[in-house]
Length: 253
Ligand SMILES: [Zn+2]
Image (cartoon, rainbow, N blue to C red; front, top):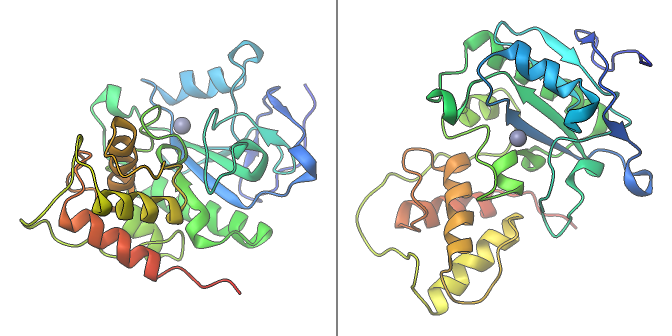
């Protein structure tokens, strides 16, 4: 298999055959974080390097912080599958994919070791600088593929990443009582919620009806930005957190 030179100086190269050309000569402008969701890191890494799996990623981060590069950054790795963000469907053509070794929901959602998170932060900063990736475009797989994907999960420490200069974040509003919206609700407030999710980047349909899909998008949002309760119900804390996140977005001229 053809090897290549690591783009990240601290990475060891273990090439995967699963990659292609980025569509329309695109440069990566997003980072997508995943967990492997497999019992052992070895089995996950082995799978990502097998031709028959037809999956790969650019980087693999071990629990001890060791980083392996499987696909050159200039190439299109096959990690995101079907998804969408800001109306763009071919996530693989515009992203760097990072797999983080973690057994995930099937394995009881174990904590991410400190060394591993430190390595993810350093890697994201390095890629982010190299490709000028905006903080709000460092996302979870679950953000771009709600319902279908739940990784890297609600225990992933996004706040910690943000404090180290990676990703977009505001402190979530505390969970209190008050009005909320859920499956089956209809009307203008539901439409406003859908508009906000869509404005942030989610592929939410603006229909005014709180559908199963809307609940899935709310759940994906909570998994990233309001991790204390992931239930697909748009309570005041969820809506307020989303509102403040939107306000905190840099304005593009
Ligand atoms: Zn994933």
